[in-house]
Amino acid sequence: MKLIKNPLFKKHPVKLSLVSLFGIGFLPASGTWGSLFAVLMVPFLMFCPIIIWPMVILSFALGVWAIPSLIKNQKEKDPGFVIIDELMGQLLVFAFLPYDMLNPITYLFGFLFFRLFDILKPWPVSFFDKKVHNAWGIMMDDFVAGIYATLALGLMAWFSFL
Image (cartoon, rainbow, N blue to C red; front, side, top):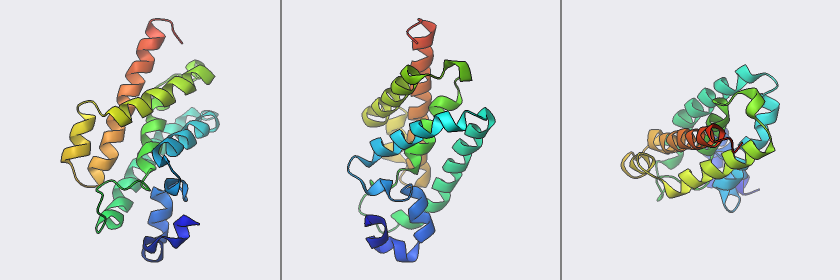
């Protein structure tokens, strides 16, 4: 309901629906909900593993396309309702992993690592978050957080924790 009541919805209904993942972005702790939504998509996407990479690319491209008109007059440079970046970053974590490595433990740690790096914002995640004040910065900080989460999962696998 918050999606439809948002004043941006009248002007940009498709863009607002996409970047908020059809209203999930208006929930409290929206980034966590967006990441969880992505994690829940992964088992279905991995029935045909070649689909996950186009989903990462498509969500990145849609974010770069849709975000500028939605943040133009916003006080925040990365408003909480914009969670397509979480979708892209979280999918990226699992896109690098082989199918046989995906299990509930991998999903849990992939989710936790992505949220950790997205919240703590180590460099260069923080660079994109603080210095690049446009759609590219919003998308790239989650892209890099996704890379970090993938590396953390790889280290866990390397040391046989997964």
